[in-house]
Amino acid sequence: MPKACLECGDKIVGRVDKKFCSDYCRNAFHNNRNKDRKNLVRNVNNQLRKNYRILESLNPHEKTTVSKNKLLERGFNFEYLTNLYTTKTGKVYYFVYDQGYLPLDNGIYALVKRN
Image (cartoon, rainbow, N blue to C red):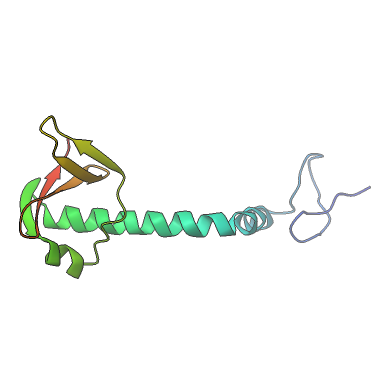
């Protein structure tokens, strides 16, 4: 009895354990199956990538200060970060991968890069 492709239903020719008739059908099947979960992950990764690029562009020399307004103008979203670092003195640095920021007084942020 010939097997049918899990995506399109066409007859499968080839190995006995094949489930799809082509790479296109295999990719389409898995993309459709994971679509709902992928949207959330994709959106979060896109915002993290955007935040990273903003911090990287404003901090070319690995240490500088910038206003909160400048970050917001470029589309920085303070809700998305990858980790926190608390110093011995209790200061909390917020990081997006290796690019970080520390809130200072009067809406100013210190930007740093962790090596």
